[in-house]
Length: 414
Ligand code: FDM
Ligand code: MG
Image (cartoon, rainbow, N blue to C red):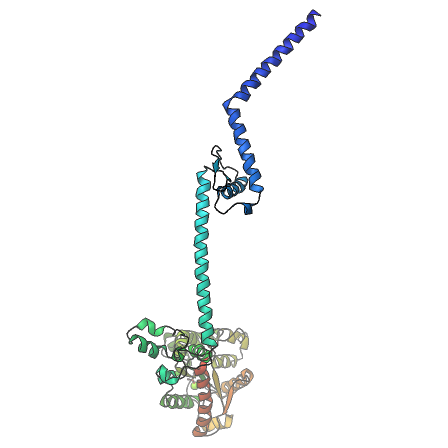
């Protein structure tokens, strides 16, 4: 009995000690703060689920709900609950003292305001653009000729004359600007037709007119006659010849043709092509600047003369390769002459390819190269007769290019 009584005493002592520690813990300020913290947190948590509709905008209630809603999503937010404010509507307001949260909130609100303003601005711009476009294109009115100043501009709008009218003609920048459409003022409107003409005008350029054929076919005569007549009729044109014997490459070619120097056939073919490549940029610039180029021989001669040598490896395909990427002519006049008519025009000169056999082979290759779009001109006739045809074909090409077409280039394999 004595033993069991001792055990009871010891157990009760342990319990008493635990109860004392527990009491101390419950009465400790730490525990009280914990209780306070969690009860307020719980209250705010419940409030965050209740409808915001019941509380007036801007009230503490709304703020606390919003804060708590966000708090639920914020892991490291530090919340101190100790202020229980009563708002006008008796709603509870919870104050978060997390500076970062408040800062972020302000930042976000600032951004929202900014993007809102930007959106508003964009919207206004878009509306303005739509209004302008509708005003311009829905209008069937074509600006009366008289108000645009007439002149070389023709039907296309003349921003120069208009801006000169309005600004006194002293603003260079404004001259290039597109005129603004003002509703109600017929003079300030331009039509869709004008726009199309403007677009075409930007592609307006000179024509690349090419003469090809065997020796003695009269292409040099016709080419120079054409240039003269085009220039006389106000079409700026130049006569170009290939090979261009004036360049360094051209001089090497000249030596070869005059049998002053000998060289490998493949490298000679490439030299002839290089002679065209070295002038490609200039050719494009001239054409884009509106100059019509009348060219005596080009890549077709290059392919025809090298292929005519009938050398292994130097076939048509190989010969065409070096021409790929060069400017393609807009108009090709192939001067077709019979062997008899060519013979009547006098003997060949001293140059390398001026032999009957070579010319016969060249003629065959040209026949093989011929495409549907070529203009085959009967060169057996008199100079005047041929000239008539040549001029008609050339003027058509000039007109076509003046209206506006993009420059063409030789594609791989052509
Ligand atoms: N020729 C011309 C070529 O062999 N390859 C070319 O690429 C070119 C443009 O050079 F017998 C030849 C053709 C001709 C010679 O021409 C010079 P002209 O038009 O006869 O001067
Ligand atoms: Mg010749």
